[in-house]
Length: 344
Image (cartoon, rainbow, N blue to C red; front, side, top):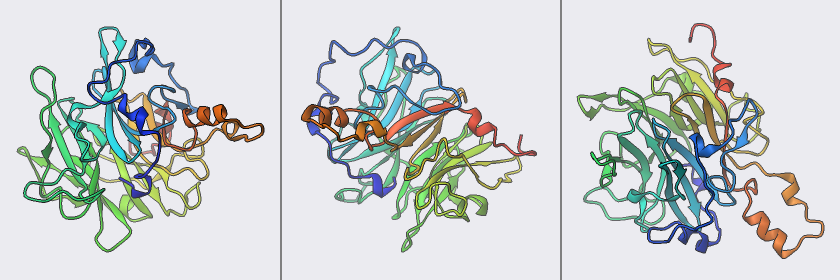
């Protein structure tokens, strides 16, 4: 979790509509088909599900089940940080609601990540580790996991524990097909983070290792998505000399060979990284067709104050591209087109 994104003030009453026990509004759109029935994007990024997933609120961190029938994403509102979910029930997508494992309003839940087989879901939470007292705000930042029961329901959150979680901050999990866990770890006493990797050996996580200099050696990387077969990684990186958004973090892709050799980072370019727009969270759909990313880009037409009225301000507040984070998607060829020779 990038702390600069952690506090956003909106109308808390809107959030309450998504809490358990609140009835589904009868006028919720009848979305059908894959990806909430949205038209596929091309090589130019587009808002994903505007008005439903991407709204005037603050959303990021998408995760989609292998069969495409479940979607999870992070939402911040009025100091409340949680994970929302929608699923395909019959032929129609349900109204998004708080995920069942994230309903405890005393703690924060964010950055959902489904395992490639869809049987486990990892996430960042401020839940206190066993034997420790709760801490205010982001006092605890650890990686937790829930497992799916035979009936498809999620179990209770479980602390991933040592050696992945430490007294430092661990967040933004991403999991490969063989169970390897990638995540971000803070460095004590420094304003710097590293992308870490922990192999899963006989069901237990090995001591995490920092990824090599190609990833961690230039700038400050954080919030990395790794492909299920581990052949590439997309990370947010701040402070690189080749950034196209001076003073802000950009999205970069790093490619990997089977011998664990990594390429240098390739900037995803000006279509993805806009001026004054900080990279927040990358994700690639299970079918590898689409790249999803969070962006705080603004629509200039929303911010024309000539003849502004109260109703216009309300419209701005409830519209995507108002400066809060929205989720965008684009054809994943934008990544593959950067793959260098020898990393096929």
